Amino acid sequence: MEEVESVAVTSCDCECCGLEEECTDEYIGGVRAYFGGRWLCGLCSEAVKYEAGKCSPRAPDVEEAVRAHMAFCRMLKRGGPAERVAEGMCQMLRIASGRQRRASSSSPSPSPRAAPAHHRAPSTLSLRLV
Image (cartoon, rainbow, N blue to C red; front, side, top):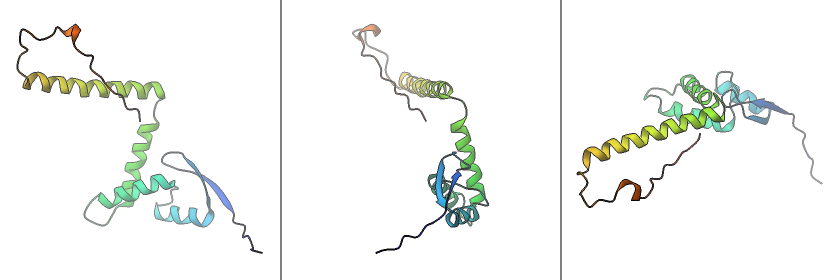
């Protein structure tokens, strides 16, 4: 018969995204030590490690990467769904107007036989919410 070892588990909220994870106290201590006393979930910690590795050619600056990632997460959390939809629509319109400007400056003028605007296929715009 195998013995089962009981391990104390603590619940922590990520200081970047707010995700709650249950981890051992030993693991929590290691994460806090690496990230300057902050608790980061697994996904945020990987993002910060990646960012720290590309911050500069000098030694990775983990603190700088943590601050940048926390700012990114705050940006994603601000406002509710309506604000995010509005931001997405503004971004979509900026992209579409940029395409329209480029197309009108690079394409020749339409021939007299071109179909009227109301007979053209509708353009498709996509919206990606974060």
